[in-house]
Image 1 (cartoon, helix red, strand yellow):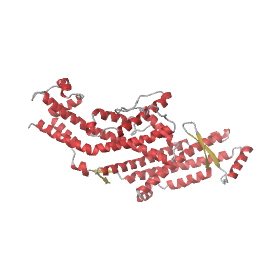
Image 2 (cartoon, one colour):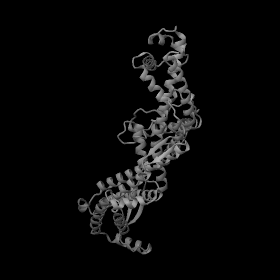
Image 3 (cartoon, one colour):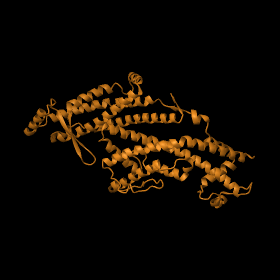
Image 4 (cartoon, one colour):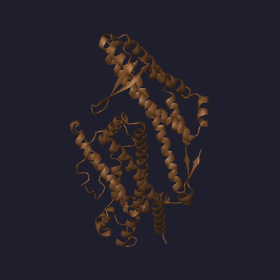
Length: 466
């Protein structure tokens, strides 16, 4: 038996072992990741519909999906936004439903063409780099819509949306990684079959050229695409001076050890650390809240000196009388939304200030750099840290909306001559927003790694805690 013949036999055995491993571990994992991906997107899509950011596609239910095809990704004019995105996002929802509920899940079904189709669908919106700087117009507007709905959601719905975003980012990466494994496997299967077909078509010892192989390929492997780069790899592995090393690399890429199947140990960063870092990020906003408090006090004093008409004084008196208000400083703040609707919320300035002062005192104790605070946080259980982090993220999100409305209130309600003296808080609002976004990312990192740990355990893979 020649060295090359022995390699082909070893390669065939390695391919069979790899196929069994993929069927047992990667296929179920891929299907579960895609199920979570679809469910998470549905949360956002339904929120977009509810808030009127996109319209129901009247043909959505009539559209029959027969094969995966990513929706359109081309640019469009601003005036076409509603129509284009309504159709694209509905189509994306349909495609995901077909992929999860009607697609065939086995190694042989995941051909190179289907892998490319799934990959294109997953990347229709770039959840991994979900940024306003994205070159993808679909990603840009998905982020814009997500930010809009976040501003008007109740805490429970907001938590669900944030969790969905975490899942979309995590499963995007996980699905892409799985598809890469299937693609690499398919490449080696293709090359193995091509070797056998070429050997059968040409005389023993004859070394056909790539041009000769391409000419005969339709009859050698009917219905199979000709991939010149893979044929070139065969020549390099079988006949080049580096062939031996290349063949070893191929076998290594296909190898499935006993420890990989059952007892693989995956190293994981301490989960608690994500939560502690998130809490410390929240703590870092305390000095910003202190600056906000000073500006609010100055603006409130400025507004207190405004000349109030007799009729308005009477209305304020009656309101306090019938509502039994003891706090004379109550502002009717107006909250607007993307659709031009507005709602009014009555806010006690004194109560708000007292709450901010309380938060400043508590949060300043846990800012980054305070070793004593870190030691205390380490003593807490993960669930306690998670509850504390989520509670303060929701608080900052709510405070952000209130402060933005109050900032606008001061600017529009002081006397015209005094408007230049109003202390704006736009920079502080930006920092507050950045803070709860970063803290929420740490929470997301925690939940993502926690879920990965659970998945590893289901696969019989131990996770080491360092």
